[in-house]
Length: 167
Image (cartoon, rainbow, N blue to C red; front, side, top):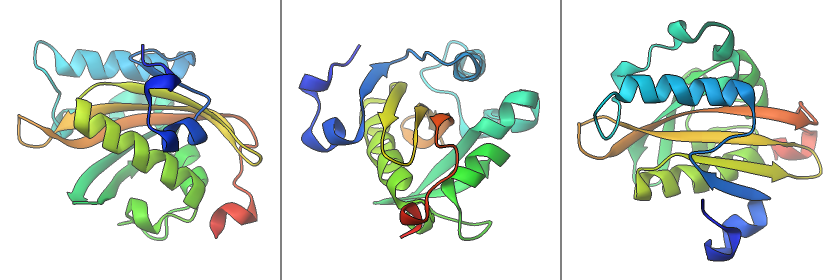
């Protein structure tokens, strides 16, 4: 488990709690189990291993992002619930172009941490307009390093982004 006292300042301000490989939400636990099954005996599953159709009722809460350049991630899949939270600008949206800027900042920090450590992260956040839990698990695009992420978002309070989040 990672403690907030060991995390950089920006993460302390954005998240109430960050855990390595632990989640409190049942649907995110099931998504994590799916990731582990796809991983098998490898260090990381590949992006191509993640068939979102296999996830059935979990799919609305899930996402896939692929690292596309030094500072950005391309959205490859967003379930219905996640899409309503992220407010993507188009079908080929990037993290930098999402309408929900506050959630995009949270995701960017988590994606960077997962890319550096190649470890699963679950983070709880509480803010004025949105609260919930985010699971991020690393995926490989080349068999060696993190080139994509799989995860999910579950909101507990304020399921819709406020107009301020769109700025």
